[in-house]
Length: 252
Ligand SMILES: C[S@@+](CC[C@H](N)C(=O)[O-])C[C@H]1O[C@@H](n2cnc3c(N)ncnc32)[C@H](O)[C@@H]1O
Image (cartoon, rainbow, N blue to C red):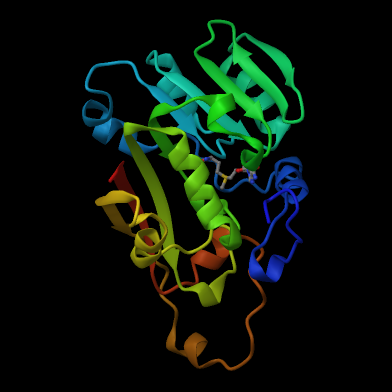
């Protein structure tokens, strides 16, 4: 079942495409960071080696990672279900674009120089035939947004879009699943290995444990159920542990 057809079950963290679009309307977009990801600065030389590369970004939102790569001359292809996100991206970054309809898929927003292509579409409607293959996969908060039932389908699709000698950068977050059903879904190191281990060599690039607010003893002993947190951000603050990780993967 893809995001498009998924039956919503917010208690189990299952979101369908309309719900994702609605999150952009009501501005429930806590995942959107105000600047590009720090890993790009830390690993720029290793990732690009002074060359321009092609990058595929599944579930791209309007992340500043896109514009950072594009302004450095790289070719970027992203996929995002919410047209609002893509419109905001081009508007806020003042990039001239053309829009075309892609039959049975959605729309393609293309920068005038052709280096940047952002599809408004369900990722699961995309294919290697339509999009091509890329040097790099940049998966920032994408796998963690995918309904659990779709993990294998997602892996197969995304890996099919990576060149045989390409590199996949994957970010995950791991927390106590009792505090929030997702998204973002909690993804442990073991789950990364379960999903990708047969197909990829996996290297842990970075692991950061978040400083969590202390939960007092009286709070811990309080048997009254706490009110349900209203957002992932609030929920994760109540987890006793939160790990943010970046992995680097290459095809076996
Ligand atoms: C957690 S956000 C991450 C966005 C971006 N990677 C970032 O770091 O800001 C996930 C995004 O995927 C989009 N999305 C969810 N399901 C999708 C699907 N099946 N196809 C395309 N986009 C989808 C949502 O609208 C949302 O913008």
